[in-house]
Image (cartoon, rainbow, N blue to C red; front, side, top):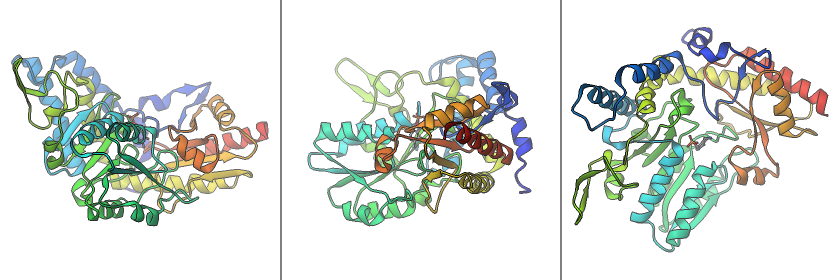
Amino acid sequence: LEQFDVMRVRKDFPILTRTVNGKPLVYLDNGATTQKPQQVIDAIVNYYTQMNSNVHRGVHHLSQLATDAFEVTRHKLQPFIHAAHEHEIILTKGTTESINLVANCYGKAFVHAGDEIIISAMEHHSNIVPWQIMCEERGALLKVVPINDAGELDMDAYRSMLSDRTRLVAMTYVSNALGTINPVNEIIALAHAAGAPVLLDAAQAVQHLTIDVQALDVDFLAFSGHKMYGPTGVGVLYGKEKWLNAMPPYQSGGEMIKEVTFAKTTYNELPFKFEAGTPNIEAGICLAHAIDYLMDIGLDNIARYEHELLDYATQRLLRIPGLRIIGTAKEKSSVVSFLLEGAHPYDVGVILDKLGIAVRTGHHCTQPLMDRYGIPGTVRASIALYNTREDIDALVAGVERAASMLI
Ligand code: PMP
């Protein structure tokens, strides 16, 4: 792969040179959060040493510097996801808040008793619970599209669930627990044909795949900064202008207002209508540096490289006797979830940790999905752009070691 020099990429991530339990760190928990490149770390230090002040308020120099830098992020997010307008990008604290915002505000404006919301069996809790609560409040019904054993959506079932009662479809783009890439174009086209808008949870997509919200014609898109090499505490809600304008504000307070009197308050324009209070300024500003980082390398290059690593990991892991991969969809991205017959995922995780290998074990905030498979959880290795074949080799050796100890 000429376009992609992983050893050069690794030099950008200082944490990758440290040891854990006396072994070189092998970080394969990227689905939980990614490590940060020096460029992002430097930007954080630069923010606090050169421009710390509040945004969108002061006339003074530092406040203008911080405001401009904060708005640079929005400016960079627009081409990053190919949004039509910068004001369609709301900065939130993460995917969870982005989804809660839509559940609350879209719910208040558009969802009534007897309406239906459609999600899928592979959703993260943060794309389940907000809809459950909203449906309960508004007397609406939550419908769940089932999956097959490979971890692919049952599209026939989805088709049959759509109707003129469907008020919104909320689905994950890429499953955090299985790695399945859902057929989002078809999901969106079918929903639109039934008159329903679509929210995509792109928390596990935006760091792996090129996303074009206009080509997708998606209505809402949610993702987190910390899973795309940026800081924690900042995330994005993209929404089509027509929906955002038709929705009431989320939280209320400073920033989201135009004029306040005790008699009546008028709301600010987009995007500020949905950004009440002082945001996470540092994270907001520094997310721009993560976007630059991803754009410089190119998401297509990243996708190609990671896919090759995923194939390598899958093939090597499958050679281990008793190892079963959960999630064998044809279209997958950057996640291998597996079980070792006769061993609890947690015990496997503990042994891997002793070897300096970071994976996630458990239900991955997808308990209904684990119930669907009748398992308590899995061991999940999730790949990022700085992982190598050597990382995968270390994982495989570690799992073999765990097997010899536990089974
Ligand atoms: N959706 C998916 C698919 C995720 O993987 C995650 C994070 N594990 C979330 C939503 C929630 O993201 P956050 O915790 O950053 O709000």
